[in-house]
Length: 497
Image 1 (tube, rainbow, N blue to C red):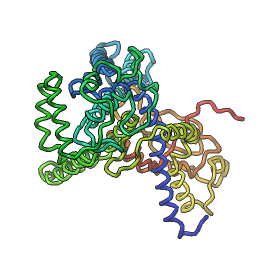
Image 2: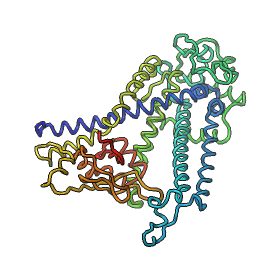
Image 3: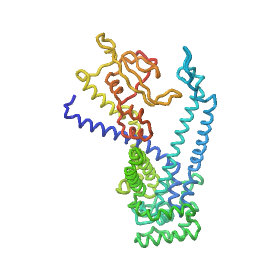
């Protein structure tokens, strides 16, 4: 054991390691592979949409050149399937058994855990199907929203997006890119890569007839730097050309553009349209909820709890935006800090080491993500155990002078078919572990008493998952990763060897 003066540094180190390892895991195990998959399916369409002569054509390319339309149709069909499963759940074969007063020696009709499996089989299958369908629909919906937000942010003409060409408008940049055969302004000539080809005709996307407008009006040379007045004149000529060609945005899009024009320069500046504007709106919302708290009880706490999920989705969408449009524009990831410009060779190295690190993290996932539980167990052991030494349940069971110690804890995210609450109380003793609801198993002789003590006193897990079981609270528990509890295996048949 270390002296007491090291307690605070150890605590700070554990907190930093726990939160940092969780952020690293979400980056290399989830975000980077998802971004690569989206770049594979939607990268070509989104880069081509960015260079479309008009916003109307951009959204048309975005929707038609990739699988986005099929994803939206799948969401629609999944909604219909969910509604059909709800209707099916009202019919007797799949309806939840209603509770009735049990007769002597027989369980109640609503108790699926004690009745024969055939009585609740339809209900159990339907519940599993609905849960899987809901999760697939949620993931598809979040992906579609993230792609649309990234595409809308990138199409903002007023924001300089490029590292070497921030003086150029989007149309001028794309005109040079198309005319030079896929070479960015100021860049060296390069051959088309796999991500540059459309799957419909296996030709580079910039050779599509949609971009012939650039080749007709732009000379085959890189546009030179322009003054602000020249840039405004260039944009005006592009807009005039679009009106003459009849390809400008119409209807609702024109109305939204007109309404957003007075605020665009105020909300979107320094190339940080997505992150800065959302943070500004969050700040306005928090101030507004604080003022309205006397009228609406709990409004401020509700808004504060939403900040984390919104920022998480925001930075994930920004990473996807940076990965998809970076090979075209070379833009920064955090544009308001001018940090992390996209370089394909550097990103390929980053992607390789993320893959290696993902394998390492998955092998040691449990040990890394339960560092706070190990620290909590150590603190309880040093504070309450004789000499700070841990013991096993077998030692307490075999000592005739030791009283029967029973610890109580809670099992979260487990429930039987038909149960409403996802939290169940269990007891842990030298003889058995479990409850009448979960069933009992024999306590393994070598199980740590200090570990079970920490599980019985895991306040954060039981409080958040049991008392405040909401998605936004689960987000904070998952992000901070400050779990005090751990898993217990219910082994019905244990190998004595």
